[in-house]
Image (cartoon, rainbow, N blue to C red):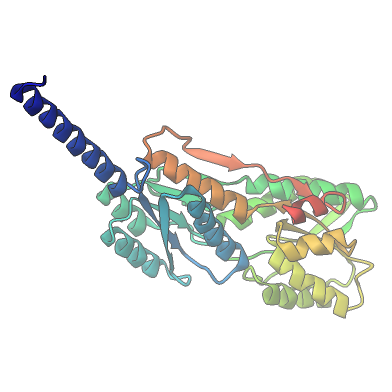
Length: 322
């Protein structure tokens, strides 16, 4: 027979086990289920009006959804540096765990970075690496390498040489644009077969801007054989201007980014012949993963260069499918 003392001991053990189970269940529920901690990551976008930057923002948010324990809060500064800093302060006031900054054409954001540092939060930069300020990690392309490989392609394709125009996005001190153009110049600028002509005006990274700048170039340089643009959007606009001037058979185009419309033009065998991949989808996914790794305590690379393969008619289909 079981004594009263034994029954009391059994009851205490059962109660203890029940309390322990309840506590464990409570811990799991409070950290997103399954024991995984829940994170909120802020995305501070300098500019969302361009397809590249909106694509980056969407890729980061989509990758967060695959995690199951990560949510994102996105902001748009509309191209205003002061607004970006204010957006960062607002994200910090919401107690986000980390911030991803997509700087676009912004060269530096000291107020934003200083605020994040003061809050003791990690910050991951995508595409743009700021000229000054502290950051946890950066993920982006080697822009000079992309310009260089475009130059190499044109040098091989245009064996007779000729006059090549350069359409820049602006502003004058834009490090990404400068790197791309300098890459091209490192090849064609040293080749006696070619003469380089820089457009006097900026295309402002858009299709309409590329069209307007191209119209001005054609008026002064009707003998062009090629055009290099610091991004695909401007080249797509330039392509329209070239078609309107009935010079499609004369002038080929080379761009940067791997924008879907550019890939389609390349695949279709138009006079858009080459671009270099700078995928916002790929970079955005990597940035979200990197941020989660940092939050989990992992030691990560300070700077990660994402490969930028050359895309021609022979390879365009595989990147369109991707």
